[in-house]
Image 1 (cartoon, rainbow, N blue to C red):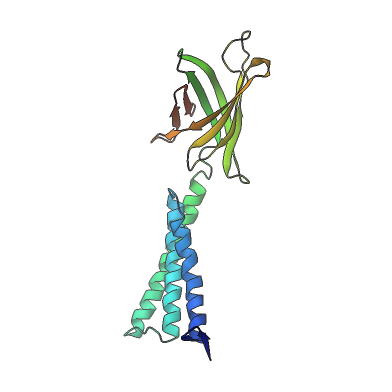
Image 2: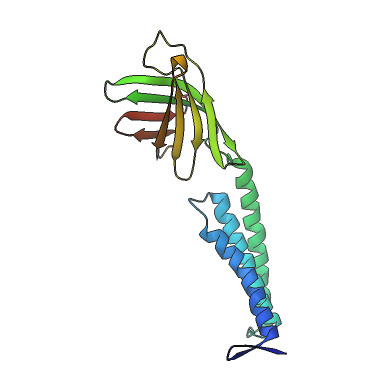
Length: 212
């Protein structure tokens, strides 16, 4: 049975086979291309998905006689090696998944904000960050420290949002007498994953894990 599109005539079984093969390969390619700074577990998952999709693709081509291996033992060897590889990578994925912290920026941090014009700290507090599954962002609150009179230092801070992919953050500073200030911050990640800094014209902001 054929179908005619414009001046071209296509076989319905060929179209169905092409769509099926695309449905097998496209999701694995899309998953791999959308990885951003992947962890070891994400890399293993991508490899496992791509390998399984490729083997399934070859199996369909072999089963439909589109592609034939020269010897039967070659095809059996390929499929056997693929199954062993998928099982092996799955073990690695599960091990790495349970060993690593799913939300590495959650927990307690020390936040320091220095006003560069007069080199004074306007905030030196502890802040706790948690991850929101809904917004895919971190957020949190600092502790509250009393201010002596109507002075410049802030008494608390709120991390409205922090994106672990772009390191962009929005911080609200709370001053005495209900004054507030919103800061748009671009952090630079350090190699230790325990400290982040942002240096603008007005402020120098540091997020650092406590030393314990």
